[in-house]
Image 1 (cartoon, rainbow, N blue to C red):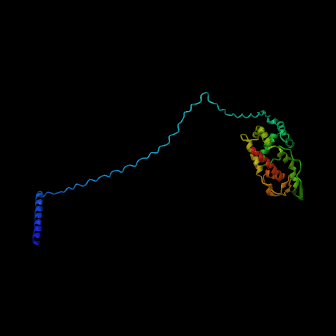
Image 2 (tube, rainbow, N blue to C red):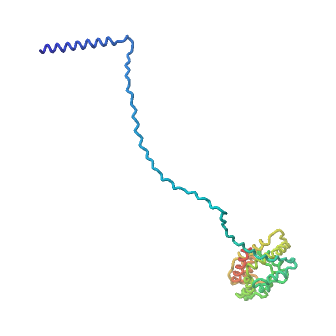
Length: 289
């Protein structure tokens, strides 16, 4: 039994071998040819697109219905703009005709008399050539000088009170400053605005007199402003003041004071109180100038 089974298996093997040889001989190609096996690659399949998400539409609320409004018929209303009343014009000042420079003294004195507290000031000024003397006085002050003659005001008429220390040395008394109180009182009592208005009125005469002394083409306003500033910039010096009298006039014994400019020395003579008051009035005037 075992022998018969073995024979059957061997027979099947021989038959399979013969079949393989026959297949190889039937499919052979001429020698030298290259056999190529073409394997068709599987065609990839595209993934189907995912279905697009459904789009939701949110409906906007419908705008409210607009009802056309017909324009009103008839004339358009007139909007009245309030009209501000025009300011009434200032009454025109009467034009003043200035006199000739040679005949100006009476005119100037009348105008000084019309100032508030001008009567006292009028009693202190000179009677002749007021315009010309004032111009010369101002021109000297602008150069730090102080004229001794032809002043626009009357002399004080009071000698300086002094106390003798020895044969040629004197001491100025404290009451010496009081000689100028009346003059400074009159100057400071005049209204600054009125004084400036009078100056502007008389300015053509001042300018003419300024040209006469050799300053043609120059503005007298500038010279007056410079003169006032020279007074305002003067420094104060404390007393007591010792004096010498080598001739007619007293001189300061202190050489530093004696060599100071004439404006500074005159302010020392009128005293610190009067100097302060006078400077205050001049400062008001120069602002307007």
